[in-house]
Length: 139
Image (tube, rainbow, N blue to C red; front, side, top):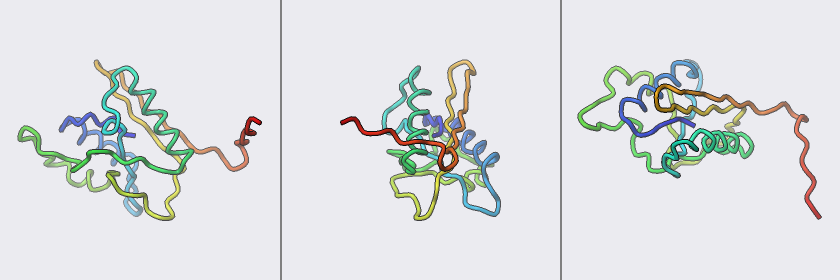
């Protein structure tokens, strides 16, 4: 779950950073989505909400789409992503499309960047088989 506040410079730099850390030159690019397109920027609650979206991604095995994403790089106010074409090509932005068949989600990360440089990234991993026990339904 990218921080993705629709700022042209910030979004491109975040995507390039994700690409530089998580892209496998021989494999499929990492999927990137953001919940802000669906719920807006909730300021102080954004980090907690994005962590919940990320945990649901792991538990449900579904990457939510980035609602209202038309292009991962917009030409806003004349700014372009020149110099970032290669890293941007190594991430897969999840728009309004289903996840490919056979893709499993074993780990997921959310980025939260606050005012004044208060930044955090949380990485969640699915527990090994047999570690989780399902709760019994209330009668």
